[in-house]
Image (cartoon, rainbow, N blue to C red; front, side, top):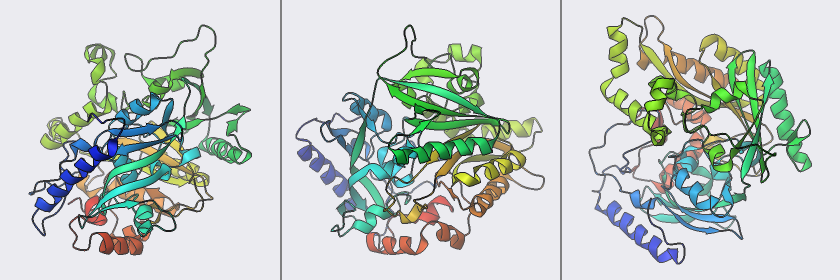
Length: 473
């Protein structure tokens, strides 16, 4: 993390802008512009670039936190881990903190993100007040979305553009006051229909001024589905007080958070541990590396129980195809990665889960309610009905490839895409996608995207959205 001065940050920031502008100008005319990043939270392979990328490592840091206005000035490559550390010192946090520590603020805004406060505050871009964006044509534009902003279209078109229009260098964001602890209730449901009804009740209760369920306030809401007859909503309440004798749980060592959902009806975490509750085991995906086995976990350094460590292991597996070679040696069928997040309207949640349990059969499954924060706003590249409550469904594993197919065919992923479209949903684009071009742009703001692309990247120095997320160039 860069050592960013807490006061008089503008001259420091201006120096960073000059450096990145010089780098951009040094890239030969016509050569593609990319970021020089050693790590990524994307689950789709990227083609290796033959030209040098923009070195943006210095754009990781919090420039300023204003506890009076509850805002922060943040560099675009700042990880949420660094952002949370800086804001919690003031008793504040971002309004939406994606689940993994090394997701960057700029990445979450251009590529979307979600978490358990999204039923109150939407996704990360909805709490952005202002951005400096390095566009494909080399200009650095300050955009606000205000009526008089000449680049208002870029402000609203930037989310879900995945770096195909430009890169966020600085963002001014809103913050929320927090308390020391989060008290949790794990509420069981025998059917997805009952769980969906509870989600609707919680979200709708906000119209009365305070979100609640069964007479208790709800600040956070997400859920875990273990089977068609076993699912839980985890409802969180921020508090500064603990019951006598109660101590916060610790899921950063031997204990595993998602298992507690089944075994406990109530729990309590510090606010910081709550924000990173899923990161220690990458939700439940650490089991693929044996990290949930007791004897391995005892030997695994506690500081290495982190999503970015598991991601490095995945990168090694991709590079050398270790799992594929092992499966072949053991005469096991090849497996197709199914690593996706989708959103469907809450009244279609049960239908999607019925399909998923029948056709895909991955477990557990994560669910997280979402509603657009400002019903007047329109985000054309990932457009929702602002009056509708949606539910994110996340699933991350592999499935056996059907006879006659290969993992590259994406048979199961294509099946999921078709079902999500049928249910009037959307699929996040951080992972593999298989849409035909016309179908893709019919869902993801095609006509408006092309106008934005021709305006802010007229010579196509940045890879296009379809080329990036579907063709994976």
